[in-house]
Image (tube, rainbow, N blue to C red; front, side, top):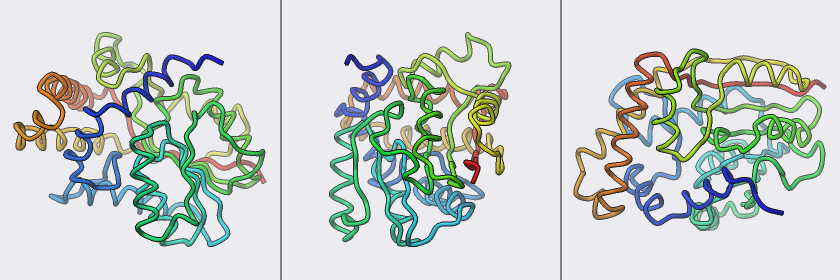
Length: 276
């Protein structure tokens, strides 16, 4: 069956040498690659780690918990959960390059018996019904080719009473098209979601809303910090990923920072629960 173009583009993008080299340098080989929580001059890695800590503090994990991390990247959150809660985590992710490093880090830390890395898309989760206690995602659901179908799949694979917690870059309800298009171009997408869409669709599907924490200023600060990092090591980034790619990233990040400051973007932690 032919895959949706968004899925194919996402896989190709995150498998490219330019992206993998860029991520290694921008995140300084951190195993996290999502938006961070900043309250001072902490490093990008420390801020990203704080997001994982914050999200994990909101969900009741234990050693019997089975977790699905959708868009797991390099597996930083999965290893945090496996180490702190001693739970089991399935990492669902499209990028073969990210998955390869994820498996290597799991094996190196002796966590390969607790963490399984699966290649697949969000719209066809390779799992039985009611399998997971928690579905987790950080800044990845925007890459879904069909977000309603994706949310139905999350509902299907969650156990009754299971938790769904995630972050995602989103547009505001009044974001003009001319503002949105340059943002989408940077990450090769056709559209973005919104707080309204997630809350309304989750409610329609039968989820209970636990809490929604709006943290848009963190998105703006995170992308500003990434831009600073590129400018401070500009030649190294060009050597790693090429001038065309780095200039594209710089233009894209500037659009994200400007749109965030003008209130056209949203970001936060969304937490839902499947009825018991």
